[in-house]
Length: 279
Length: 279
View 1 (cartoon, helix red, strand yellow):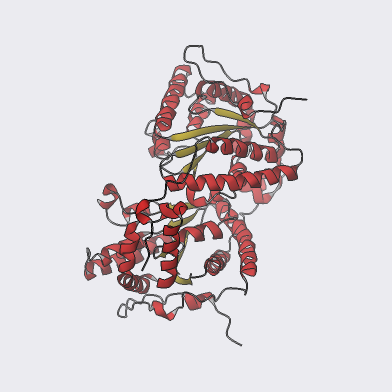
View 2 (tube, rainbow over the protein chains, first blue to last red):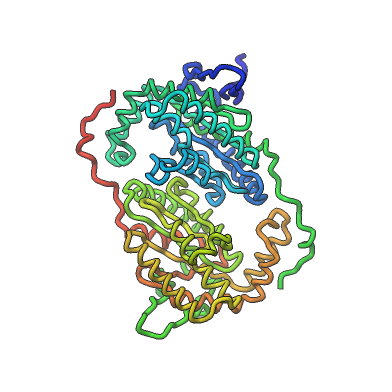
């Protein structure tokens, strides 16, 4: 019998400052595999709903405590399913406790600061679950592929990212980072579907075709950043994402395990309220 | 047969600059009435789910167009159900298109600006549905009850609020404002429930008891602001809220009608994409 897959098998090895920077080899993980599937789509959807209810409960405790914080970073190529993951995994989680932060190309004002300036201002507050839909990792992707930053600057940015995430972690933020991994064929199908359906045209931009032509360079930039920024306080996980159902259930399992590990509980009852009657 | 209730029957009459300021008489609407209930809780929940799916669809179009904006303002006394409304009414709406903004007591920095400064920065962006959980209306409530602003300042604030909301409306924002209306008895029961259940202690603060002692003054402050700031571009609605199920279904009906009135459609298909094949 095959070994049951563990989430840790999909975690990118931690960056080791004593060793030479080692890119993570994405080809080691098959994007069409479904290691966390229970068998059928129906079973997976049932499991997703069950986890959703548990996440909702954990998030209420997080919110009630107003002490710890959670940050989920979602990255992936165009059409890899960042939006869809948020929609499916958080369907049953109270929107009051979530803050979803989409990062687009920086504005002129944002670009006039250091690259972490706009990101820092969006960090999770006490009791908050923040989701970065794209993130500061775009700043070691696009400029890398367009060659507007050189190797040295890129390595400096990796270091600044590690240090920034360590600041967040030291201040009580639990960080999880997911790379949604799809194949080139799957991306073609999804882009084509956006072109063929006029109600999906708003999701499509011709620049997506240009980016696709450079997908080898993007993949390499991802392999570099994954190897350089996976740490014990902010680990990267590779999520096989050709199957949307599998992607959702795996991200949900990962968040469930992460939040269960936080030992979230309601604060003890306030003794001063015992027996208090409202008039 | 009794006349079927209309949403407009619960709309606060519009402020008329030519007439003397007229407070809205809250006692005219029974907080325990259920005008938009279909009969049973089950039927109401079914209706709520059906509206939820329609709101999700409308919100996707809003988001796809990236042009119009929606702003929902939720106000009400402590325990009136602002959080619960967000949770129930938006359960099926994609969290990616929502932004929920809770307003607490202003920070020192916020208080060092005019009272609309922090609010303006949170206004809905193009394609966005923003929900203000409390709002700038707190600034004509608490300071009014505590008498830290006088009549003249309060009237100036009403005027600034009308002008501010007119700026938002002129820039493409559809504004709906709901006052969640509960009775004093209902509030006592809900506060007591928070005291009696330790897992709800985090929602309770002894200042809630102090505020309750002044609820007459708060009610008067509400009646004044409702009369002064209901306009055709940013109307106030009174939501009978002793029944949570009714409250949810009525707010949902109101939002559905409002968004249907916006005539939201996907933008026309992009001709340039016709026949395009992804390689």
